[in-house]
Image 1 (cartoon, one colour):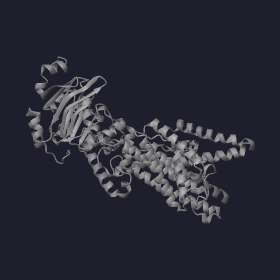
Image 2: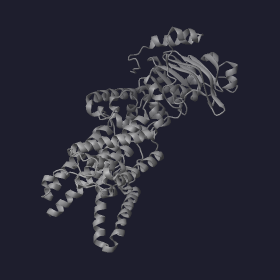
Image 3: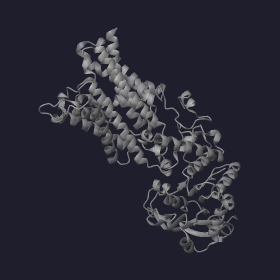
Image 4: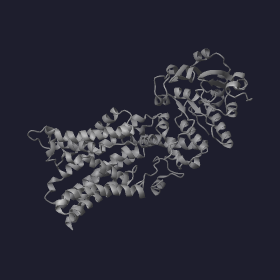
Length: 329
Length: 288
C-alpha cells in the first residue's frame, strides 16, 4: 500500500511537471495558433540552465554555482522566454510552416549542443547532483515523494491560475482574435507580430520551467531526455486533453502520462527480456493510436476549448456562471 | 443614445461643418483654414504594370460624410487600403488630421483615430459577438502580460468600461440579443452591423466604410443608413464606398467618383449623378 502510494506520488509529480510544459504549448498553439515543433528544445534549455546554476562546482565543468533551487527555476523561465522571443523575432512573421521548421531545427540543435558541449553540460554523461527539493527527507521515500508532489502541484497551480487569468484578459482575447482572423485584428490596430512574440515567449518560459522542475525532481539530466519524442508526447497531451483549454492541457498531461507509464509496465511484464528494447517502441505506437482515437471520437479533446468572455461581462446571457456551465461551444 | 468619439451629440455644429465643406470649392483654401480629417494627395500605387490608383487626391473635412463611388475595379478599395495603411503608396501623401501617416503601419493609424470596415465582413467567428466588440478598443492596459497582475485594478476598470460601451453600441445596432452568441452564426447584414460596432469601439474620428449595404436586405438597409447618419451626426467623419445609389443619395451631401484609378468627378451628389461622364462610366447609361 505504501509502495503504491509512493509510486502514485512519483507518477503524479512527473505527470504534473509535464502539465506545466503542456500549459506552455497551450498558450502557444491553443491560444495563439503558433506551431512549435521544438518543445523538447525549450524544456532542455530550462533543465540545463537551472542545473548549471544550482549544481555544486565540479572539476572540469563550467558552471556549478550552488544557487538555491527557486533561483534556478526563475532563471530557467527567463532563459526560456528570452530564447523563444529571440527565435520568434528571427523568424519575424512566425507563420505556421516556417515556425515549425525553425523550432524543430532549434530543438535538434539544443539537443546536439547538450550532447557535445561537454564542459558545460556534461555531454553524453549528463549532469548529475542537481539538488532535489526536500532532499533532507530522502531517507523516507513516501514523505519525500509527497512533499515533492505538493511542491510541483503548487507550482503548476500558480502557473495555471496565471495562464487562466491571461486567457480571460484583453491579452488572451487579442490572441484569439489574431488566431481567428489576423487581417481583421490588424485592422483594429492590434500588432499581430508583437502579440504572437509575447505568447511565444510566455509558452517558452513555461516549457523551460517544466523542464527545470523535472530535472530537479529526478536529480539527473542527459541529452537523451530531450529527443523529438518528448515534443511528440507533449503535443499528444495537449490534443488529447483539449487544445485551447488550460484545464484540458493539465488533464491531457496526466492521462497521456498514465498511458505511457502503464504501457511501460505492461511491456515490462509481457515482453520477454531479450525483446524489451524493441517492445518499448510499442509505447510510441500506443500513444499514436490513442491520439487517433481521440481525434476520431472527440476532435476537440477530452475538454474542448470553452467560450471565454471578459471576466467583467456579467449578466445577460454570457455570465461567468454560463461559462462554467457550458464547457463546449 | 449613441455617443460618438467626442462624447455627447454635437450634431448641429458638425453638420454645419459638413455643409460648409461641401459648399467649398477650393481644397487648398480649406486645408489652410484647419487640417482636414483626411487628406490624400497624389497617391499612386501600381500592381505589376497596372496602375490601380493613379495620382488620386481626396480631402474629407472633419465631420463630413463623403461618398466614394465608381465602377468595379475603379480602385476604391485599394484607395481604402492605402489610407488604412494595409498598402503603402508608390507616391503621394496621406494625412490624418494634419499628421503625415505615410510611413506608419495600420495599427499606428488606428491609434490616430482611424477605423475601417471590410467589404466582406470579417468577424472573429469563434468568438462571441460581445467579445468581438471588446477586442477593438485601443490602449487596453490588459493587453500587456504583466499588467494583468501588477495593474489588475486598472485592467478591471477599463474592462468594465469597455463592456458597458460594447453593450451600448450593441443596443444601438440592435445586436444586443446576440451578444453571447458566436459571431459565425450572424447573417450577412448582422455581420455588417457587427463590423460597424467593432469599428466604433475604438472611438474613431475617421471611419472608412467599404460597401456597408452590399448584400443587405432592404429592411436592414434602411436601418444601416439611419445608423450611419447618426454616427456621422455624433461628429465622426465618414468616408463611404458604396454602389447602392439610394444609400449614397440619402447619406452623402458630397460625392467623389473614381474610374480607372483616377478621380473622374466630385461635387454635390444630385449633380454628380446627372453628370454625363459619370453616367457613362459608372451607371452604364441608365438614369440614376
